[in-house]
Amino acid sequence: MADKSKVIRRVKNIRRIRGLRLQREREVFMKFGAKLRAYLFTGILVTAPVAITFYLAYKFILWVDTVVNKMLPSQYQLGSYLPMTIPGLGLIVLIVFLILVGMFAAGFLGSFFIRLGEWFVARVPLISSIYSLLKQIFETVFSNKTKAFKKVVMLEYPRKGIWILGLVSADLQGEIETKFSEPMVNVFIPTTPNPTSGFLIFVPKKDVIEMEMSVEEAIKFIVSGGLVEPSKRV
Figure (tube, rainbow, N blue to C red):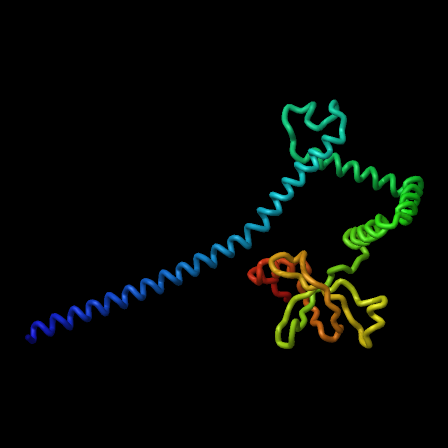
């Protein structure tokens, strides 16, 4: 009987040790799977923007080549005198054309026609609003004097104790500025992972903390979901 009880205890110990080993192996496998998922998501965040950017650029170049080819006579179409089609040739032609247009617009005759065209467009009811909006957007993007998105700030939003990064476009001016009794700033709050979407809020100047990071670093930080941290300023 004593030998039988020893055998039973030994079997129970073996089962207990085997169960602990299986549980430990299961935990290790779960941790390994969690790490693999984290590595997978990090790889997607790193490679997806680059891949999508190059893909869209390639598609844009092919689209420009097609449009430019349709605008040219058949005997002068791109690649008609070349043994192979060169992607991007239409884009080069478009850039040269835009440079020539810019040179013409900078002259007296070109500026006269531009003012005449704007005078005509301003008198068309719906077209004038669309043209005015697009002109303001392009002037804001391409003007060297603009202050759009030149400063990164941190502020408490949507409540106290929760902080978020924002991009300051300019100090608040005009009609909206007259409604406040203290200096305000326009802050654009971009969203993750698409920083082109977001919302605009008006914040008192005293409630924002100016950051030393650049706008590009802030955008990378937002797009990556906090994985790509800005470098420290010494």
